[in-house]
Length: 130
Figure 1 (cartoon, helix red, strand yellow):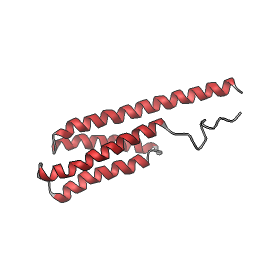
Figure 2 (spheres, one colour):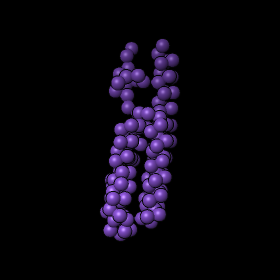
Figure 3 (cartoon, helix red, strand yellow):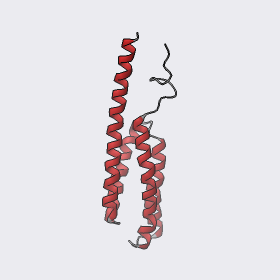
Figure 4 (cartoon, one colour):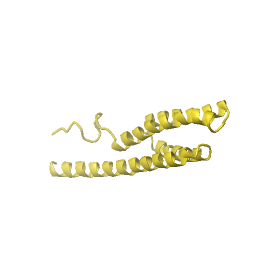
């Protein structure tokens, strides 16, 4: 009996990757919007603000597409540290960065849990139907 959505099939989607990518995409918007705030309110030089704000936003979007690689999750945690670190320039980023760090961590851990439970369910299914 063939099961089309089982492990090893092309239609399989990673809940961890999907949730983490969603967090990174939303975070990219927030980080991109820090650029004008850094320029107008914090008095950061335009070039520096563009490099930091838009650089982190682009990194988030690129990283969202690279989450098939295990190292990308470690880099995702580094982005969270950078987002919180922006709080030294824009104090509100301490709060927003912490919120995204919590969302990222939750997506990572819950995604791993879902994948473990899904793998266990498939193993039980195969053992039962072998």
